[in-house]
Length: 117
Length: 111
Image 1: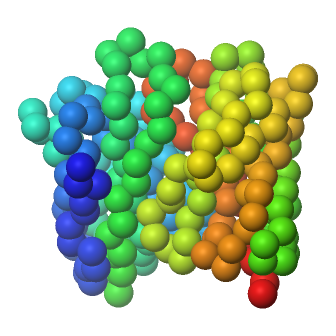
Image 2 (image 1 turned 180 degrees about the vertical axis):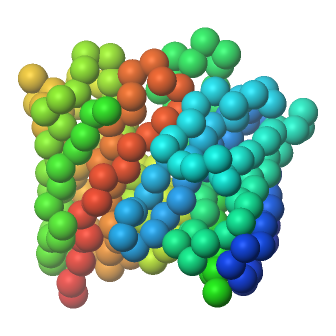
């Protein structure tokens, strides 16, 4: 099975721009979660999508948004970029159930490294 | 939110067992303990998870105390490739796939 893929792997943007990152989960996985990793804050949960619906959200401003398509692929968008948005953005997929009673592991992709200048 | 506490770094000699501790004193009865590791800014890699009983797989063993307030990840024969940041995570009960990563432990395996 192919793993979680993320595109692009590296991205450079300037303040005020917006960016869209893409994540393709492992085949058959319906849950996709997004995380931000910075040296100062570590790994922080952004949001989770399941069956095209956001069912969990972390403590990030509304500039951070996401969506999931019917094939489970997911995108996240950051608008009005700030210098502090420079980070490694990680996507993770998981087998999941609608009930949400979970004990399945998440499989992470390699991440997209975003640099905001 | 359940929190975890881990030492910031540990050293281990190659070939010896690495024992990585984690405190999770506020864990609830239905919350699982997960361990992941991250090698040099790659995506985190799943290692093992458990609820109450000790668990073992091909990578490691997980020992959870009877009161579930702490756990230890054991890498039985550490190699240089095991050098990484190890994260102990408490999965929030029924809150779907929401993981809270702590600061992790940087394990340095030395020859």
